[in-house]
Image (cartoon, rainbow, N blue to C red; front, side):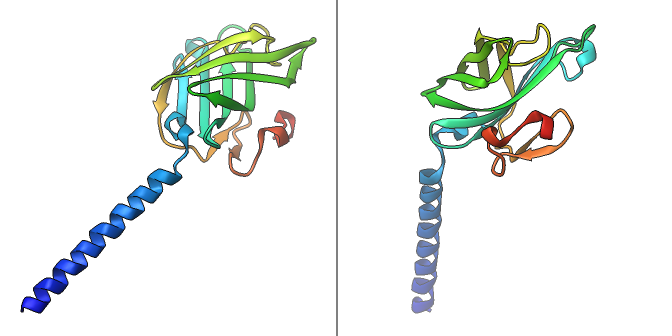
Length: 174
């Protein structure tokens, strides 16, 4: 009986130790940017109620995130825009700068700050190829903090972050 009790304690000890090691390994393997994962938005869920915007954020490396932003002004014009890109962060701040998204000679440059539950974008240059009067500038509130696998583009197609680099993505092809 004494041997069975000792054996039982040994099994419990080994089991607890291995669970602790697994948890520690998961923590070591998580990315610094995972805390920013999720969906952020402003406005209501309907363009009928006014301007809306959504940003889906995917942690790529310890200092980069992939994002998809979709914007719409709502009534009367319903002008909109969408962009898939990569943002390099230093701490919780970064500058998105792309010559790929230009319109009439202006580029696309934003100052981006990510707090615990918000993303704030300040447009520094250009309209990024969005519709008339559409800008990304503003504060977006986190609606979901789950790590997304994909985003749905304006054509309701699922684009998987792990399979499609922003440099290979062309809005016209999807």
